[in-house]
Length: 154
Image (tube, rainbow, N blue to C red; front, side):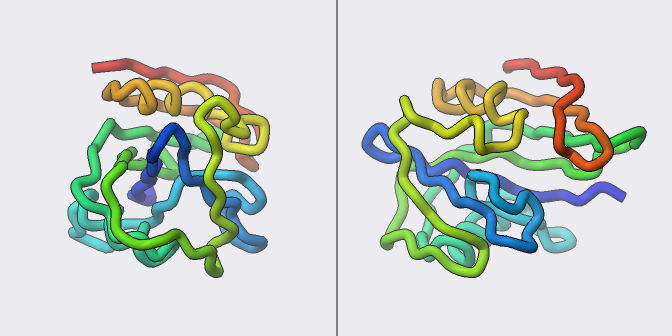
């Protein structure tokens, strides 16, 4: 079964807001955008607004959808995760770290790709350029290594 989720990159004044996933969370220790699983029947834009509010305390206005990324682990022929990718720069509030993990602003020139999911280095630059894309990323069974990927821009 495929888990449908969202991920949002907040961009403001040449910086992006990332979250280091807390111990026991999927992606533990990795820097990532905010987001999470969609509820059954939930619109991805509504879901990303809800998840970002829950994880950061920020009220996002008008998230921009960039595309869909499918993540495969091991021998799976269907994606383990299908993630709707968004960005936003218009929000209300101040970020507050919570149980999901520590929040930190990074200058765009200093994104910690070495401490992020391996696929991020392939699609995040496209997002930062304002481009739309879709992709499929193939990891080993425990998701510790990216084996192959397909990425197309629109």
